Length: 571
Ligand code: ATP
Ligand code: MG
Image (cartoon, rainbow, N blue to C red; front, side, top):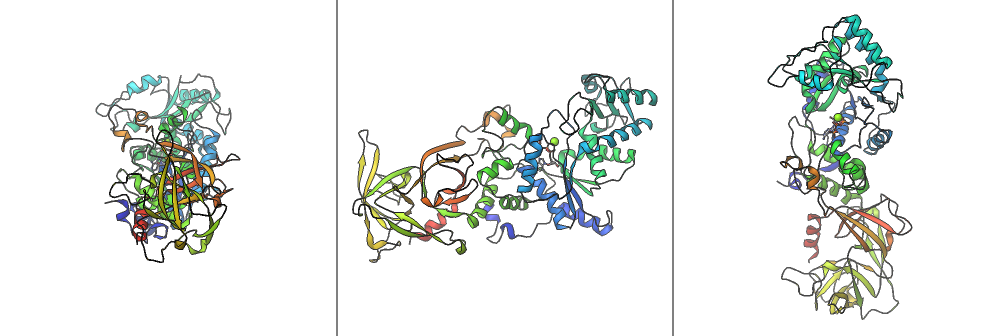
């Protein structure tokens, strides 16, 4: 089934939020009073890259649940790794969450806000004989860890006295030891079938500045030690995370129980995967740092900032997240579904204009020199309130190269020698002759127009089989247009055996057209303005636009919608 077939006309943003297993869990908690009817979620990004569409799913889920249940959702930066984190990422994440339409109000938090508390709790665990300082190297710790089939081995430092552990941990904090020389570990069970419970590391020494705490700390908590306690501190009711954290849940519970603090409920759901796309910050960073794309907000990137620049709307992304739903099993979503949601949304809001991407000059031999006709055009057939505009028509026009064929095959109904077509909002024109250069390339067409067909119909009832778009040469705005294809050539790039996903980059993912001609109504359009270029797709003004001219990104093609329109028009 195509994504289109699964959905009704009435779908889209008006559809009520769908129910899913997480809502059922929340409903159950509300019935049994586990959290006293409270619903308090959080979106907890690590500020180590820009957000992608997978994060959008998590944002919509967490903020959406809070909205639906009259609860709250926090934004919390899980900033426990000062080496990979940057302020640039923090700022971009806040911008993206806001742009998606969500508001954390006064609840912006950082795991680093809790470093003092986390340290105190680590001291408590030491005092209770539940944590110890280990002098093994990272390599040795790995060796001692065992495997899925073999139990691990106790560290020779595991039975240090509480006093010695307290002293060493204090001195780790005071900066007495070099990076990597010691760690603090939980004393749980080196034979546990769950590797996460084999004495996990709680603290490591890192003499590195943190973007918020500066040089106050030279020991930093591990993500696993900070995450669950941060949720507890914030009074989170439902700690929603992706499936790979299922095996970490017993560890988070162990911390909560052994420290003796409030326990949120962790719930795991399937992360979003999309065809022809990678969704992992580690991989996206490579695309940026190795210059395979122009930056984090390159319109080919699956980042929220890339999609914004490309012209996707927050409504379309929210609709997509609602449509894909929330499941417990990992699956793969067709990128066509995302594009479908974008198209549905833009169809309602984008003003129609005419733009010729690959111009072919047309001279109307019987049109008076110097005359300009102002033709009425509808701005959006989906929304009468968007009104109409005048489009100038004159003797020299541009049409799309692909709308003319000198020797048309059977199914080609557009312009050809001796054939008549309708110009959108204009007249019938007939191709009388083809002008070529010395090399035989077509340089222009000489056509005649029929003044009696103004507005699109012939009084004598004669029919044409196609309607094509055009612009008046004297009035057109020059523009650069960037067309995008999938960034990767493989539908499931992560599954290609023995191949780095970088090797699947599509060399044709970006096509730049520099001599496009757009109707004059777009002049001065601000970056971010969205249009439908009739028959050619949805386009969005890029911030690269400037004094030299407009630059457009093609947001998405029209596909079937145009096929329908063609059918209706081939009267
Ligand atoms: P990545 O693998 O891209 O680095 P991450 O899980 O490390 O992602 P975080 O910053 O830790 O990124 O994620 C913040 C939140 O977004 C987490 O709750 C995480 O589970 C969720 N999230 C990340 N990727 C996806 C995805 N593809 N689908 C759904 N949720 C996701
Ligand atoms: Mg992560």
